[in-house]
Length: 428
Image (cartoon, rainbow, N blue to C red; front, top):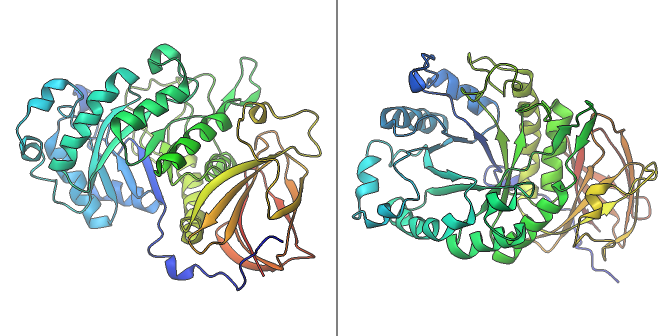
């Protein structure tokens, strides 16, 4: 018999301490960047909007070596209780930096480094593997200069070319990064919501494979995985997501145990030309877009599920082909370690394709993150029936609400909306 932990689980006491890291690329931009004549958006009001969106880590892009701008942003973040990752282009991966004396980095950052809102530095984005050895040396130096601050690097997704990765495979790319840099986390940016050349909606076929590779290697290394969600269209083949598509991205990542949800982008990149895509959560004139409110709604749900979710660590993910599916999902076919069964699950049936992330908690309980994996733009609501061995009840988090549910002979029936997911903890 499978052991199911007895007693009603309650994680409400963790609500204030278990806070999911929610990040976003492109903080409110400094004035007259690159002589573009743009307005200065580093204001308390602009950073209040960041906080109100549910983002708690915001990443600089245009501050470059603008110490005054980073200081002001760090001050606002300190006041509002969020973290700011600065960008100083003098903190590069050039080996000459390794000859700096102790304290040289700190001297540059003296005006902001001790502010509570300063969370660390964005070091580099999407480096090839040739930079990893130098990044590893730089990280050791950085940790002496800024103890407790994030040495933030973001990596390529699986759809990058081998010449970009500078490796023979994506697996080798991640392995080398972990080996040389010894990071505190692995962050990547896989944008899955696309349209083809005929205007038809599609999802990248390698999205789950990418998550599986990084999640598995992070589990083996004992470090968390972070990934980016798109909040804008940035090309002719990418989508601007609505709320269900934002939620779909988030739930898909949670099903693979991601410990940080990150958004691309918060403020619309200044160099994006009109017609190249859509604005991000905030347009170039500082106005909120529909995506701002979509992200805000999903983040409010995350702020209520994280009390339980962060008590658990990801084990593996099961894929379920929907009874309405006419063929196997191409994203499922690329997976190497997908579960076909779980010792606590007697059966699981879904009308649409679904993911079942499996987790083990600090209290030895088992949890499941169940998602509707059908494309929110063209898929349907998903009727899921999952039957657990030896469980009589379940704690279910849905749309941020925690509910205790009595099971029918171990069976939980749920209808998941488009892009929707639930976090389930069965018990006796």
